[in-house]
Amino acid sequence: MYNFSFKNRIAFNYIITTALLIGVVFMIIYVVVKISVSNHLDQDLQREVDRHSKEIEVKDGVIALRKHTEWMEREHNTVGVDPVFIEFLDAEGKLIDKSPNLKDSELLYIPDYVDNIVTEGKLADKKIRQEQVPIYDDDEIAGYLLVAVSIEGSTVVLESLRHVLLISYPFILLILFFVARIIAGRSIKPINDIIETSNAITRDNLISRIPLPHNKDELYILSDTINNLLDRVEQTIEREKSFTSYASHEFRTPLAVLKGTLEVLIRKPRGQEEYEEKINYCIKEVDRLNHLVDELLILTRYENQKQSLKLEDTAIENLVSICLKRFSSQIQNKGIQVHTNITPENIRIKTDSYLFSTIINNILSNAIKYSEQGGIIRIDVTNENNTVIFVIKDNGMGIAQKDMDKIFDKFYRSYENDHPQIKGFGLGLAIVKRFSELLQIKIEIASQEAKGTVITLAIPQS
Image 1 (cartoon, rainbow, N blue to C red):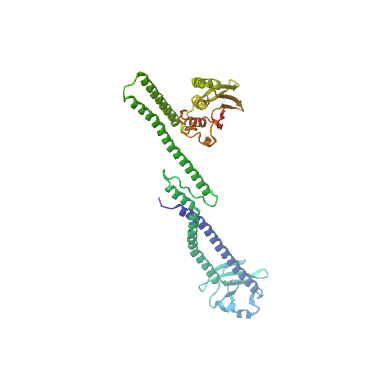
Image 2: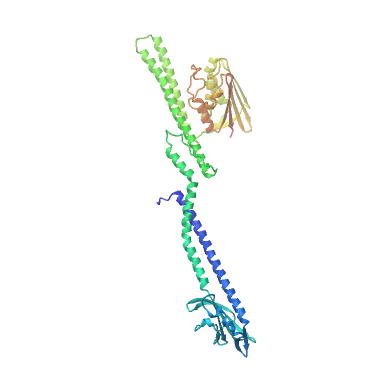
């Protein structure tokens, strides 16, 4: 393959089109000038024919000039400047008289022509254009008038024009090529900026962005689109780094606790009750690790999944009942009142039961976890315009406004330092967000600090 740059390709394609256009224009110019010169010569010929026809008289079938002083005119005596050649022939084509500038030469006679005829030829190596006109006497041809003019000057003009056009043609194209190349270079400068910026971008350097052109054209849109793509890539990589950092931290903390507890146990003999206490504590930490692994596996499994959903007809009331039974012990321990209102009671949706129940479980888990002792949780389900509105409301500690834009981030936990007794990994709402996207559920969260949180799910029924 030829190493033909984009800039040169633009200039080359432009030149091909321009070459065809200029070629057509030059041809038109040449043809128009040639036709104009030819018409001008024909007008001169006709003017001489008309003029000399008036100088002719026919007596007894013999042609003669009324005034022989006509031959004394310069145009009939010389062949230097705009000569006019005249010849009179009888009906049989024999010479009667001719202009002095013909000397020993004669014009071309074409017999058997009763109409005017215009031809081109040579006279003493000079190009001429001549007209043969019949002379009538009482409707009979008495002879012929032959008039010729030199076309040397016209031929020189046409030849000069042709040479100028042929010589200037490649030079014009060459100049236009370099001009087009310069213009193309300026036009595609944003592309060079894109290349330079792309070469400067690495995994550890995602700060660079492509300068936007001044004109809001297609290159502006391309540059802006790539910048937006780089923003998303940077955010994704930052989230990945944060995810790895948080995951390592969450794994490291319970492992350190397990190690510390076991090291304490083996330092000296202890009583059975103390052993059981420490072992039960270690079991809880292991369960916590298992729960973290499960949530990470869920996130990893469904991170890029687009299909493979097991959609089935699901009764909302049954699903809510199962979820509440799962958290019954936590609800009783905190003395939380749960009020459920499902209208109508037989609301059904077509969804993936596992994903949807996971969404409800995680939302309920947070509502219970962040509710005060004796708090209230309300679950309201209604059907509006073929959309099921599922609302879970609590009167717990709520979410600070500064944290609202981060609540769906992996490992982000509001009040983590203020309430260390509340256990969790900050993955619950990240899973809720991802599963809601898979099931095309619109989720909205409204919260006020110290007043509670309202989570609304808009679920399409079909």
